[in-house]
Structure formats: C-alpha cells, structure tokens
Image (tube, rainbow, N blue to C red; front, side, top):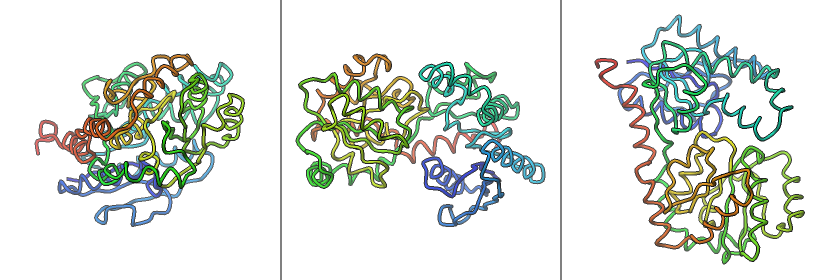
Length: 383
C-alpha cells in the first residue's frame, strides 16, 4: 500500500518536522511505501532512507502565495499519482487523513483578538496570510474526501466542531506523545546534576525554580506570569525564561518595573533543554493558545509539577498530583494562586517519580502506533 505525506517543510529541526519523520518511519515499519511531498532543498539525513521525497521550489515571500504554490503542487501530483492514503500535516485542500497539530487557526485568531483588541482583530480580516490559511483550513476540514481527522486534544476537537461543518465521527483525539523511555537517563540523574547545572547558569540551586519555555512571549503569556510572580511576596523563587522573542528587552524592563529583576533570568533560545528540566521544580505554561504544548508532557516525564492555562490542550493530562490549571489567565490573582499551589510541590525523589509515571502511557511509540493503526484499520480498507 502506498501513502503520501504532506508536509510543506521537513528540512528543519522543529517538532512538527521531527514528527513527520517519525510518522514516515511508522508507516515503513508496517510495510508501506512512503513518499513525502514538501518544499525546498532537502537533507537526506532528516528522512528515513526508504522514503521518496518530492520537493517543489516555492517563493520565499509572500507567505500566503508560498502556501498556495505548495497546495497546487500537491493537487497536481495526486492527479498524476492517485494514492490510497494521503496524510496531511499542514493545511491543504485535499487529504484523506489529517493531523491538526497546529490546531484551529480560526480559534487562534479569536484568542488573539480577545487579548490584543479590536484593531488587531480588524487586521486579521485584511491580512492575506490569515485569509489564505482560513481558506485552506476550511477546505481541509470540510472536504468530503477526508476520512479521519486527528486532534491532539479534546480542546481542538471542540474548536473544529465549533468553527467548521464536519461529521464528529471523523475526529479522533490522540494526545501528543513523549520520548518517555529516552528521557529516563536524564530524569534519573536530575538530583545529582541539579546543583552543577544551576551553578553553571549562575542560578541558586536551593530556591524553588519556575521554568517558562516558549517562542513569542506575548502569545505564551509571559506578561501574565511575571505580574503574578510579583504578587508572591515573601516567597523564595526564581524564574528561568527559555525561548525567542524579538522584544525580550521589554520583558526584562517589566521585570525591573515589578522589582523581580533579580528573580528572573532570560536565557533566550537553548539547544539543550533537559538541564533546565533537571534544575526546575515546576513548568509554567500560561499560553493564550496552544493546541497541545509539547513541553507539557516533556516536563511531566522529567518529574516537574506543571501549571497550565485552560487554552493549552495539554492541560487535559494534568491531575492534582502532577499539576494545576489556571482558572482565569486574565486574572493576576488567579495565576498567582496557581503558582502558590506549585510552591507547595517542590521536586523531590518521590514526587518526581510519581509525576513521571503519570505519563508513561503517553510514550511516543505507543501514541504513534495508535495513529498508524487507526489509519490502517481493517474496517476502512479491508486489508
């Protein structure tokens, strides 16, 4: 059986690109012939060796036209090469199976409008990139040829049904997996590595450590987090901020304004995240929109208590034993209350082991098998 994967970019090292490679390998393991349709110059080292890659050259700018070029390439290829399973990972007009790893763009725009004001909302209506994404998203979700749509959270499933006309039976929720077994060594070494890792980064290993990871601090809710931290008077803590933002200096200025500049360190983008997991007691994900933030399950697999907003689909895997959910992200006292809850759960040998065990069932290989087996289920294909 032949399968075609649609992924507009697979030559980078992002999470979705890595996921595309793992999906390709999963289908190969089932005896499938796998092709990937993508764009740009490829590096063979990023793909399983038996995968055939078909790439089209697209313009770099404007982005909306680049998306249209890739979609037309996909349609042209499939007309010449009819394929039983077309598995999409981006927004394309046609696929038989689609993993909505990016969530629902219409819901994302609404979350931005709710927090950034009516002027920003107006800009969405005239921005050609947003117009194109919404066009492709609607065509993808409502295409009669779509047999299965995979959402990585129940939150995303509700959003799909809220914004688009699709048979609910087609939607299956499979939460993001985590490299649970691969992380075991780093997890077991956290207590012995914590002090050295903290000192190397000029951090005090003896205070409670909050960790924030995310690119684009506004959408990820860093401002809400910093205002809430300022309310924790008399508490000993430190916040490490990982990720990229072109206006990070504004947040450093805000820390000074709130008089917490000595309790916040901006590390910028980092290639190695696990040492920060070893140092930290709790991860904070106060994002305004995340279909399912991968760091949610990564942090749990490293034994961290997790504080999440309701608008991160990953909050669905949290329990009172491994995390807490912010009741109102726009209420600073509500965020501070969740942080206070975390402060009562410092990382210990026992607590970290219990938290790690809570996500063993989300081991990446297991979640990948759920996805692959669903695609190849006999009741749809009789094979």
